[in-house]
Image (cartoon, rainbow, N blue to C red):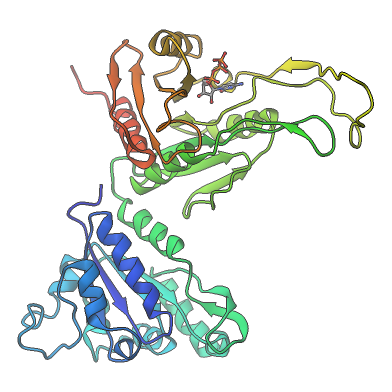
Length: 398
Ligand code: CTP
């Protein structure tokens, strides 16, 4: 997905500089070429060798180092970067960037680049709260820089306040979102549902299912990474909300229906990965049902079929979790719910389905074309589905 993309990661002198090693490593694992540029102060906290080891590339530490491959043309880095990220960014570096100083490689690169720049501040709460830092950040924002964080929490001084470097996932999510801006789903509105709904029985109990929400979250992130404007309608899950995605939290099938209908009204695509309850209790008991009678019968009423209710000029993708007759049942669902595509998986397989990080699905389209996919990471499965969605959005002339 990110093969061939270049990131310049600027690291400055903050105690949180060690976290940048993890950021560099995760970006490299995603297939990005990461050029790390360190300020002198950064090297007091972490060594260039750490970055070189995880990125497998030279680390730029000195603008005047003649043996460096970057020394000849100091704007070469700026030109080849698809995105420049300064994480952590100290108050000093932020001040330099805001005023256009260019006295070392990182500030030169930021000044020279035409690519988007992401800045993740990290500093003491007093320095962050100071009016001059706030003015500098406002200046950067007004020039189109993207500021991530800082977060509130425990600082190196032992005090608690604003100034912690944003979480790695938040910084990575922002990078992927920025890189995907011009991709093949740019500006498309995509609604994704995720997780298993909860249907209350009484004040403390509910009917639920084993859906973890992982597949839907992976679809939402993959769509975001291809430039889509994503709304994620999600029931309760343990997964942190993805960065750069509008999240609509719901609990019951009825709430999910209302949220999906609302979000889908102006959308181009709906992808229903949620495990929606088929039935909900006819009545929700007040308080907590007592353990008195020998048997207890719950009256259940059928829920609305959300996918069938969504109509209009929208591409609809469904999932089908089946235990037998996979293709026949999924094809039947595709027709009944008027879908463009359905992804079916075998819930009896251990490596795919509920709770796992991987999934093995078969895609079936309206024309009855059946495409079995190998076992893959859920994020990769999401991209395979989105490849089909892209084709459906702009059909070829033949
Ligand atoms: N779905 C929906 N509304 C429901 C139930 C399911 O929109 N009330 C969607 C799911 O999100 C999924 C697809 O329909 O994308 C198929 O869901 P599944 O549970 O496999 O099918 P059902 O229609 O519920 O049929 P059955 O449970 O009998 O297999």
